[in-house]
Image 1: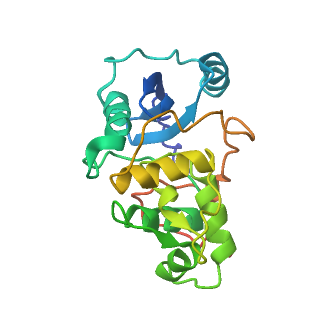
Image 2: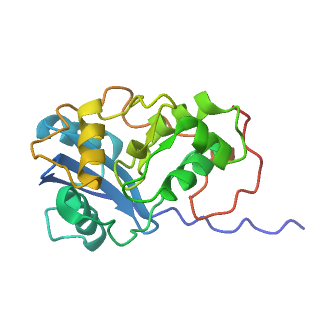
Length: 217
């Protein structure tokens, strides 16, 4: 006789907030496992509509209502003058195994340091996957805390940045102690919203050890 299927336990809904910071207007979403999304923008109404479509059953939380979301906002608000990285916050990153390997490598880049896309590819043991590494950096949805801004081209050029090159310059300047102020994130990132989901067989949290081999880039 077949055993009855174990009852499923859906994840608690994500929580989100929209708050101003010294770098720009910041949307942060997370849940019991950690932060899932950190995005910049300037149009509060547009951000609210986008997040409402992604999380239709979850109203935004005001400042002071959620310790994790507030900690993320505070860390990024302090970034321009902090002089050192904030205490690590829990992350619930979702992506392919390859993307997670790249994002783990980004988390190892020290404050104030930069790496080339080629160096990151070598760090994950895939030196020929330079373009795929750049694509994984572009797919990062947790701005600043997963520091894709610390990766640039081998020739010294900035390369790309999802939230605009002015933002990338400002973050690098802040970590070098040379931030001059202003709001460097002038627009909401373009592209599909919410992020297109990763097929379930490749989805895992960043803290989990991959159980399958991801697709080769």
